[in-house]
Image 1 (cartoon, rainbow, N blue to C red):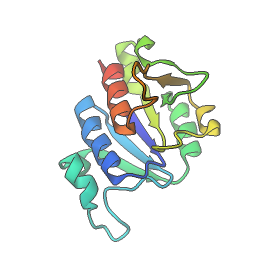
Image 2: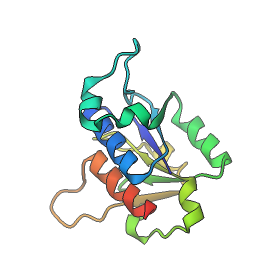
Image 3: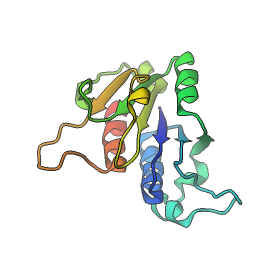
Image 4: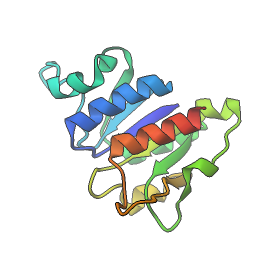
Length: 156
């Protein structure tokens, strides 16, 4: 499984996703848009990411990618199925997805900005849009928490 982070602003959320991705068996994280990398442009570690990821950024493969659209196109050509996590008219509950064992290696989980989520043009490129059914008064979860729930569910 892969992870695609698009326009995640919070360094702490990025760090949390690195740590969770490692635990869930994600093999690579793509950092797209303005999502910060674990190191700055001078090669210095971003302590906010390192503090939360507890070192996962040191050994989990990651790549900074300018165009999420080109990345999605490339991954689809490599037979990856792109699952966007977003509340949308076309979304369906994440726990209704059943993958065969061999399919699990060709999955990319796509998450978007904390406040705005994923833009419509990016959602249209996903193979499926998944959401986490909410039972309380809040309409959403933190992006890193939502990522973890779906990553562990798809990987089980």
